Image 1 (cartoon, rainbow, N blue to C red):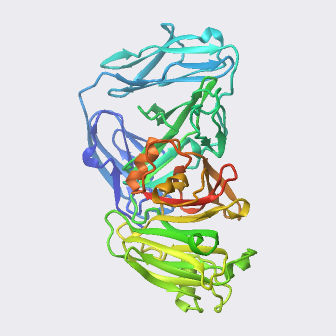
Image 2: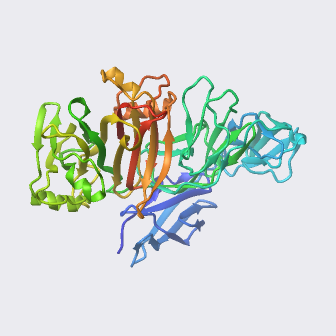
Length: 570
């Protein structure tokens, strides 16, 4: 099967200093393996490096992923090498640091200028043998390594030396150095979307975390939390792209906005404290153009349903930038059918009401074996109701963009455990970026203890990863006049595995007034939490297609009303 191929960057932009790297993307959105037929270029994996003097390069496509090109496709590319060479300049350098004797500490420098750039580190003005990269690791540090470090960056147009970086080697330890024991999976994101990289994406982290003693917040990394205390060390972060430090990228979260197509970019994060430092394993990020980008496709929430204010309320928003038309949705309220999963105390007779801002749109008391519902259940992957006469309720609606709520209550004033579900029922292979989709899903319930915590499941479909903001609001609900809120919500994110188990991905207790969370929440249209740290919790994460669960509980066993929200971040 032959497909059109585009170069990234486009061929008309290949005017740069050598070397210059390009990749190829097929019309299917998959990266293409290329070989060089002729011209000054080399190939390494999926990347072609144009080298040498101005000339024409002929590239030949072979295969990409599961797409094999029956007839080889050739591309002729003419590129020019600029005669102007810009001398190097230093954009940022690592801050002064400390390390405990016997530990490791990494120093780094970021520079601009016409490549290739060469590096030479010096200690107390004397060149260090072999220290010729953008990073320098002081290993097994001893007191003799205390002193001043500089880096000189050079190219054919000149050289520049950095300001001195001071390193202090402490003879005794007051904590433990950071340690990362495993790396996250690669991410394939959509062109033009947002990708979030986070230290929390690493499954194991140990060390003393930076939590100001005056703050209630707890910073969570890989499901492990560091609590506030008077003896915490300061922890710092620095992100790198393909081995080069990214100026200003010094948060546990690194946000890539409006991502452009690229293949095989490698991101790492240097984590440091006063005891030492560790560089995370590389995380590969691919960005592709695809007609079927990642999207939210369903929300489910299980809760104890009572009368009055303790109904189960699920909200969802349909829309998306540049979309038009309507979206079919399946909405279900399960009670009796939960018994097949050994759930006891179920809601005997759930009533389902669908609301829009204008009022009630539809309602159902008992699905009565509706064959369209049976077919749609199967199409979206929903479990089957136990019988055609069960009192579970369901609706199929085609809705324009807007805000909606689904309320689940006992039809005859009964109470018990119920499951509310909202599914995107757009047929497979039809859900393109131009059609409306679920962009926000939420659930508000009374959070108890033990088995009565808030459990919200959601799924991501499509062919690429999706960035989401997940929030657990407790105290923030008081501004909406909600009484009896959960005072101290704890938010945990789990990934569902194919063998029926789940993996804890992230935990947050207190969002800490993060400016990144504030910015992204504003972008998503979420109601404001203000700018001060509150006990409300949030997680920003980029997730591959699959099934996930957000659990909200009281951090100290407390109970009350909480709202969990999942927002698409475009």
